Image (tube, rainbow, N blue to C red; front, side):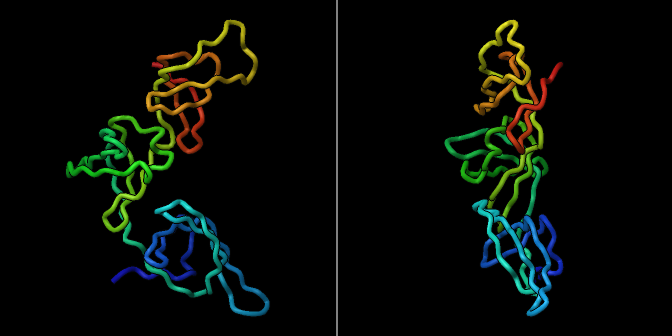
Length: 190
């Protein structure tokens, strides 16, 4: 028997199923108007498409908890438009289509440990660490004396992603990138 969730249990990040589709609650507010029945104003995001929806649910309405599992896996390689991952405990391999990766594909390099979300046994999303160390493979050299505060230049990383970096960053250096925003954080020394 599937878990049943009541609107009183709503919290940010809770996963619910509506019409055989998994969603994650982004924001909610319990409203008790002076007249009429109480309701919950809810903003929720589809785990399959990434679309965000808003809807009011009657207080006490019930939902099913989706058949979702999260596994820690390691990124192995890309083949065509599929990205291949391995479960490090069972050594089972699975692939995730590029369309299901979202922005995570910009930061994947071989042997990266990631978290993969499965819905009814099918991989639907990949979460990479919040910060990744990536090598700069192409960028223009900074001009000597060009030290204008906050000046940036584009740099191509080993994954093919282009990020703006400070002028002192050179090809071959490793930088730390925030995977949530896609922005440069710092130069990695060592």
